[in-house]
Length: 480
Image 1 (cartoon, rainbow, N blue to C red):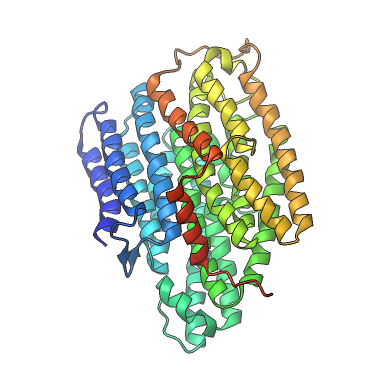
Image 2 (cartoon, rainbow, N blue to C red; image 1 turned 30 degrees about the vertical axis):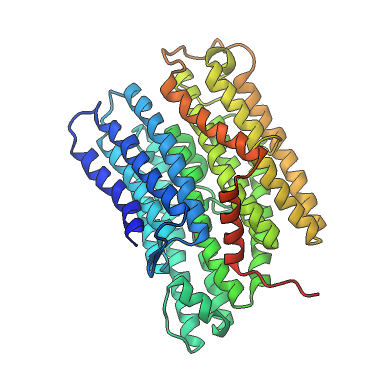
């Protein structure tokens, strides 16, 4: 309990301190200080120190999400110091405070063991991240912010309705309406099945909207396209993982109620739909930051697809959540560097990034190879595990569709990325003073190192935690 409060409290205290600091130059330094303190606490929590109890506790999937968000935020915090130094003309008081508030709320999501508290924390991430999207103060960023708020609010309202349905399914089944996840799982076999089905659908759509699953993804291209790269990295790798955690915990309740087949069918179908929609919009995409948004839609589809394919698929899905979060950090941070150097996101004006920004261009290209599931990078391992689960479950059509869609996405994304990094800088492109600096290169380089390491082997503590998370879901034993 104390550790859980520390994980949320340290960033929130840091947000207050950052907001009170008058210096635009000194204020961003609070970010890495709080990030390192939070990372130390997250590592301790991951190791099982003071797991907590009651409303605030860390279950195995919560530990995975917490560690991922903490590592990603630590890298982004150092990058943000360099980025905000370049944006000295703009006041960063709200930006720094909201970044730390976002970290505090995502930590609360990981620790929340009450469905109502979880919902409040997810809504708080929306409120804390909205000002981050508007940092550039343009008409497009204002439109993206409002779209993010409106669509996200509809999603979170549906999640609230789903929470009420879940509570009523307990009452209809003669149980107390406790919304603690452990109580829900323990009493799930007696829940009213129609109300439980409705609750799962509403919670899936609600938190699926926050994930950016198709067709609830319409906020994502604008938000990711207009926000600074550091914010895009936290949204694509952090917020989406927190929303996925909501679906994982809800799925556990449905499994405990003996309705795993009902939920799995929804997850598999929507996973394939999300990948298909991403593939369609990825082809001939000229805006490389919007391309990353559709890549996120694809990988959210992979997460829920794996979750619906049984224990092996769930293992691959949880591993892929970690892998995708790290790779998205690499791609969004380097895409931000390229954007700054060219002052454009369009392949009509951006080319030759390898010549103008060798490190950023090289890492952006490596990130593309990794995120499309190529060996020896980490996403290859998790995507292959999900594919293996589909084949092992006898779902050959699903496995075939997955392979075809991955190929389409590889070709569509490759055309955009290669147009950005190859050739000579376009004559139409602006020549800005921006160039690769250690402070803007080391964070994505560290994240890419992690992607390579996880592609070669999965460390034993991480593997054990993922295995615990799969057992935590309580999949029924296969019948002989």
